[in-house]
Amino acid sequence: MLPLPEKFDANEWMVISILVGSLLLFRLPKRFPTSMVLVIIFFTSFTSRAVDHILASPSLDFYDIMDSGKFELFGIFTYFLYAPFGYLFIYFYDKYQLYGLKTVGYILGGSLFALGFEWVASKAHIFTYHDWEIAYSLTVYLVIQSVTLLFFNYLKHNLYQQYFQSKNITGY
Image 1 (cartoon, rainbow, N blue to C red):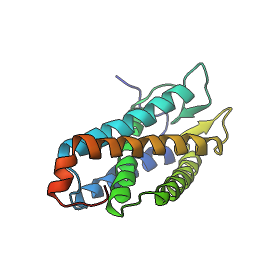
Image 2: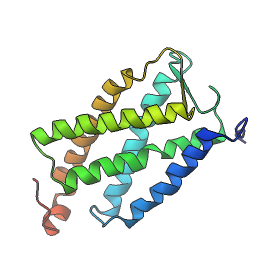
Image 3: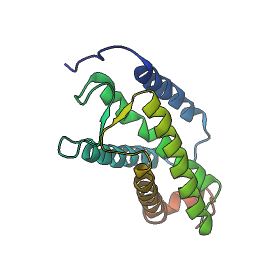
Image 4: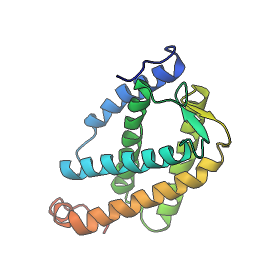
């Protein structure tokens, strides 16, 4: 069994608040088929967590997640924090058809938003930095969000093309 937090404080409350707030995603109008939503959620969770595991690994140890460098129960809950943001990032990209040069601005804006969110999360002690400056994260977000949109466009144009054509969703 995973250990409980040493003390229940701001970081646990922030994780719970985000997870509960994420339930509002179910209120958004359906834009993608369920299978695509699941692929998007798994992809954004996996890529974000993979980068976190690399950067927070004992060999690099740039930061700790939650109260300590050890794996704890709320550390698992942080796995689910990335999926809602990744889904919303793709949802609004597609809904507002932010293609071409707009994509560059969108990625930059999304990365700056993520940086701001990370700053708030660090103030709540979800992240505790060692040899890491929050400004370094901007590069990581720019790469991750670019890869995420490349992946989404691949899905949309190669695997779900018929779905989008049948719904008459433009932006190809």
